[in-house]
Image (cartoon, rainbow, N blue to C red; front, side, top):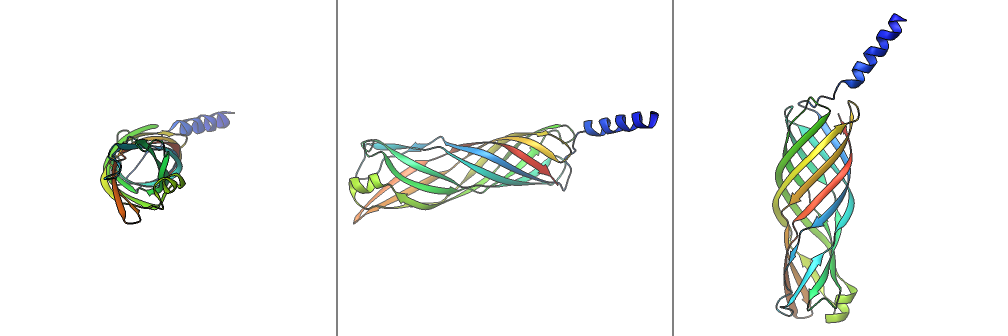
Length: 216
């Protein structure tokens, strides 16, 4: 009985021991994210100087990898891709959807983890983002309104800010909540026959993610 009781107490103590984030650990997180542009969309110039627009939100899975340089400092790389569309405003509001594109924004952040020895691990980070726009296409509505249009978007470099929390489930697995702000902008070139229009958009998305992670 004493041995059984001792074993039970030992197991309980072990289960209560918080996971320790240490130098050399690799953290892998799988999140569901929502990408919410805080956009400022300019007019389509020179043809539609009183136009505007808004960029749609998107939802997608995301995977990221963090390498702990020390017990407190980590480097994170995220990978995800989302599809966004631009809906016309102002003089183009009647057209509706103007164009859609896929967005690939790999982001590298340097993080500070405040409580590596606890069971709740808040962190903040800052870093750099490179965004590639691909598979850009004018909408059927835009092609019908002004003619067959080719859309090309410039890629973007910008900064990224981050805050999040890991909640330990056990010594290997945890739940994660993460928020990022990414400085992202693009110049769009719309070619319709011999006519060329341009549009500038500050996308600046807020990326909110919830998921699970594993510590290796």
